[in-house]
Length: 76
Image (cartoon, rainbow, N blue to C red):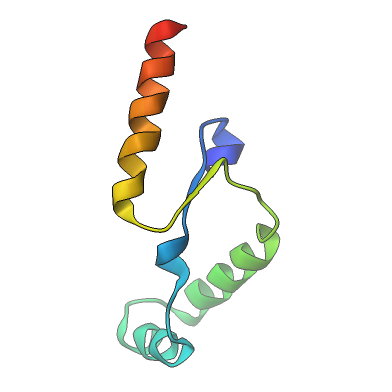
């Protein structure tokens, strides 16, 4: 969505590390419908080749990216 909106895209890679068995269980206990699950799979397939501007492995890394962007905005 960020790329489509023309803003900086940051991929939180840490959010993609999960056990597939846990994913199946999560889907069972959530409010997601079968259509929601199909849509999620379709979106992953459609956008698998999108390249983010930054990739982070922990939430704490986000701060330096935001501060650098704010600093550049003040200069411009």
